[in-house]
Amino acid sequence: MMKGKVSFIFLFFISINLISQQDAQFSHNKFNIMGFNPGYAGMRNAICGTLIARQQWVGFKDDDQRVHPKTYSLNLDAPVDVLRGGVSLGFLQDELGFEKNTGVKIGYAYHTPVWFGNMGIGMQVGFIDKVIDFSKFDPINDDPILSGGSDESAMLIDFAFGVFYKEPDWWAGLSATQMFENDREIANNAVYELKRHTYLTGGFDFPIPNHPKFLISPSSLIKTDFNSLQFDVNSMISYEDRFWGGLSYRFKDAVVVFLGLNVNEISIGYSYDITTSLIGRQRRSYGSHEIMINYSFDLEIERLPRPHRTTRYL
Image (cartoon, rainbow, N blue to C red; front, side):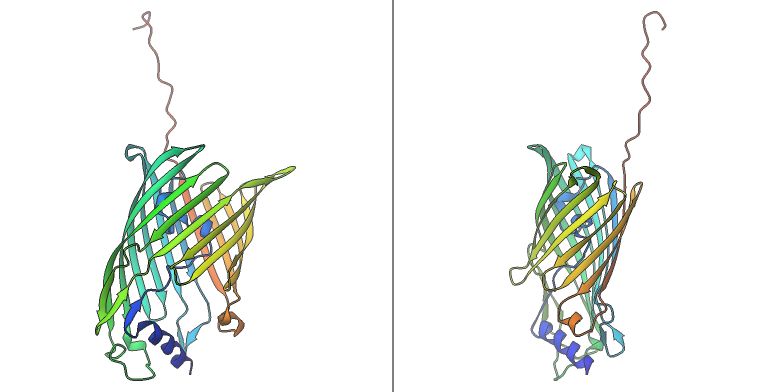
């Protein structure tokens, strides 16, 4: 019975045109800005790598098959003075039911001082390999698109653009991914079309009065493809820039609990999504788990003082 319901959902999205789902979803938005805004490349003035592993809607099954979304992301970025900006490299593997997306993206951001902060203006090119395993579908009615029983794939190329502004105490960014909405035929006249997504994000940090060791960091993220809208509101508190935790609310989807630890250049975070949508209320999901690891290091080497010779000692 469950298989028929899942297959019907996929049938609805595939029928004539295959329209991509929303970009991969993450709860560690504040730590994953590089994942959706190419203007952020190099803005941390360090070589940084952020790895995120997400298991969404754990427990969601199609008969005995686990079909809950699974996403793995790795983003690297670094400032490059000779280019007057920063460069980035990203990898993504996103599994959604019987669909698997594997992508790589390369970007550059130009940095320029603005007011009391720094602005990054970036572009990114991405290559996405989309694979659908049609052998796992159980269509309610005969459909030539869902018949055949084989893996079908398509390679798509697209671009992203972003602007990011950062001051010591606050930051904001605006970006768009899959800008040109490229499409490719994937099977039996079915066309897979990328959908443009627009992101607006921002946040700030301020110490608690009379308790300067504690820092409160509220932030938000709004994402839309102009057909649907999703927004997250986050609030985190950190102690001596070492321990942190907080809560987040994703509208009509989940309440998220965060915990994290900073050890030298390494940040480790965990989040648990309490699903509030219909999937959670019907107990088809045990929630979502996400692990984040960030490593940032500065390659600047302290130079030894240069000796100065005088005319007395040549």
